[in-house]
Image (cartoon, rainbow, N blue to C red; front, side, top):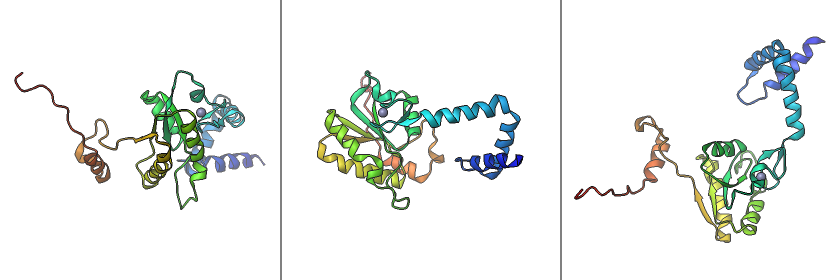
Length: 205
Ligand SMILES: [Zn+2]
């Protein structure tokens, strides 16, 4: 039956994040109308991704190679490891161009509800890397959510025995953000994280 393939396509598309049944139907129709230019190319891209994309056994990044391109890059700094929740957090940091060290991708956060424990986050693997590579700093870049912060505290506790310096990203005002538009949590965190303003030589000048 011809419609069966379309129903399957819609049912699978509806499982994607951000797509419900209605947007899945729209996407499926769009794909079928663009059979050669989009649908067939997407099918090839999906097969390639399914065959080639692997989790890096060192850091948890996704790549066709293991170790991934970041772990394999000789010019990156072995002495800094940045801990992120998901690969898209790693992508965001890479886009910023701020960080030239290595990563540890947790693949989630500690969560009693989802049954996600320390063994799922590769913490032992992180500890082993810290001890093996003379790492000087572990930067905890988990989300400012309850689970993200719980996870950061847990990792900091586990790392304390190694003597490595543990830092975490500051929470505060977004660049270009106006004070009166901030939610209370962000404003409170920014207030808590206030820093001295370096004095400029105004007197006598
Ligand atoms: Zn890697």
